[in-house]
Length: 231
Image (tube, rainbow, N blue to C red):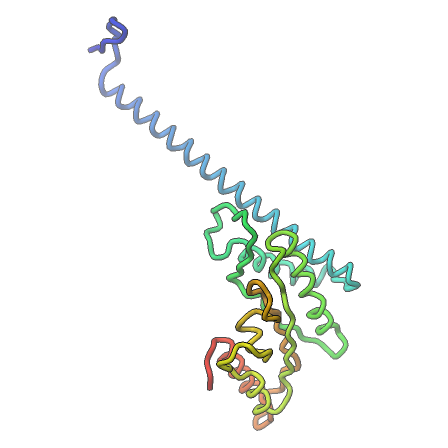
């Protein structure tokens, strides 16, 4: 058994051994490719975690520069939520194993939703007022410097019919009603691109039967409006 190479016969082992060797080489190559792919994914994930970590740290630093101190206990609760929010914005719905897009972008698919409770003067409203410019600064530094984060405050503890009117979905999106700002994600008509809106829903009413407003009815109204439904 032999093949002609450079005018000479080169004797080879049996066909079974040749095929087995080729199979072993194929398996080894496949393992190298898999390892390389796995390493790439690890590097991509490590890069993503690094950027997200820096964005969270920038949020804390900006809050502190604005005179708002976040203690370790609140960082422990807020940190993971901010991480998930920032990561979803950087990925923009893409697979986590894919490299981060290099163009300026931030399209979150995860809503940063916080339920803050505590006695009067505990600092709930203060945190909300201060965290949105900190989030804006973090996104501007690491994702999209043109994206604007706006702040809208809505008091829920008022007569239900008044609240219903204020949260009405209007066909004209050129006004500055609460729902128009949220739906358009713009505070000014000259804003170059849709941004993000932080909605502070304050003073959730009690759930006493027959009360006006009633917590269950207000929650139902919010659910309908934020899903784009009238009624």
